[in-house]
Length: 199
Image 1 (cartoon, helix red, strand yellow):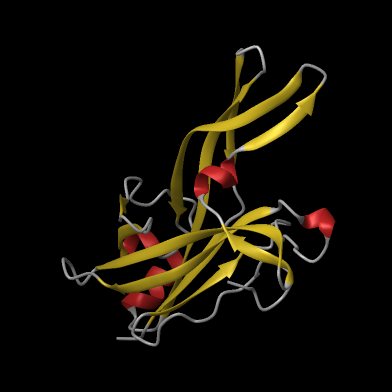
Image 2 (image 1 turned 90 degrees about the vertical axis):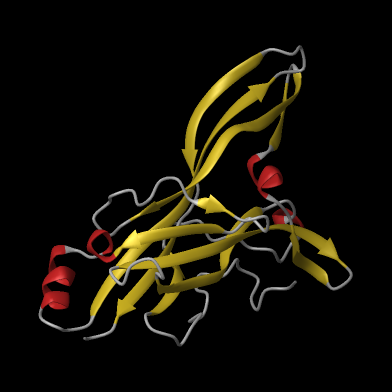
């Protein structure tokens, strides 16, 4: 798969015309990656694809949404430098050359985290499909800010934002077998902007 531009996309298009409407946007966090020269080979990143948002069949006051993180690595192919499919393990794994030899950096745990516009973690235990999609059910009251709730009560359209990122821990494995815990990290993030129609 090739991207439309040499940068890992900042914006993915409007994904659905059904109510509620939504779009997935890369946050401007400085995590833009390029793949157009030899110095970029090995760059790794991910984008959210196959995003879906719908009114929950369990409750009219909740939304079901899912997203499919797809991982890519910059490589030189037959058509020049391009993004090639990768996976989460490769994204979180690295090798560092030191005086003692090559140190492997590997993940010890990871999970997808979703926050509301109010910085509240939403439904922290998502279900994960075989394809790697994360599925959440979110109450509308948890999704909206105070202003959004007020607009909703008055019958107007309201906008909610959920922020999606990867939280993970890593360790270093030295050539002599010694291991060192490197602590917790977070990836760049995406916003899923959801517009609830007027009622």
